[in-house]
View 1 (cartoon, rainbow, N blue to C red):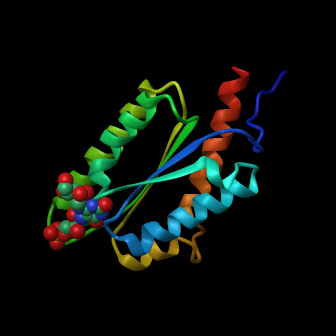
View 2: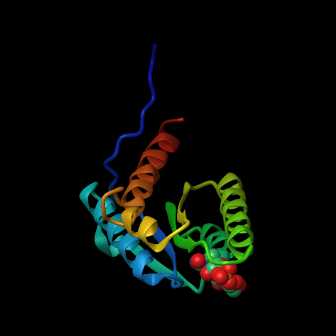
Length: 153
Ligand SMILES: Nc1c(NC[C@H](O)[C@H](O)[C@H](O)CO)[nH]c(=O)[nH]c1=O
Ligand SMILES: CC(=O)[C@@H](O)COP(=O)(O)O
């Protein structure tokens, strides 16, 4: 049996990180995690571009433009949507996930999903570098694996 797995080391690749300013206390931590993982796996820091959007809802539209620009080899999307008192949370996460998923499916380059969706700020903090790891680092590693797979298939 021949197995195809993603090699984690990638050089000479340009990565766009799209991050939302909303809940920036969390998204700044996710960015650090993603940047750290990319650099540790061989991506040059100057080949990483950070693009800020107002909130998670705006991520898909910018991701679509980034992919269309042809200037990047992969896109990391980062955000933090924390439940409030109304149904707003569900609307924001549904549209964000659907939109990023659609861009990913239509894209020739990998687009990964790093939007943390939690009931509380504490849960978000735990997933942004505290006891539940750093979702930014996890999805950046997934991006590298997907890039490597795409090269082999
Ligand atoms: N409540 C959260 C939002 N809401 C803002 C929207 O994402 C959007 O920017 C606004 O509706 C304008 O279109 N965004 C987050 O990223 N996180 C939230 O918890
Ligand atoms: C996740 C959200 O959209 C949230 O910030 C909105 O809070 P609320 O439902 O209390 O208006």
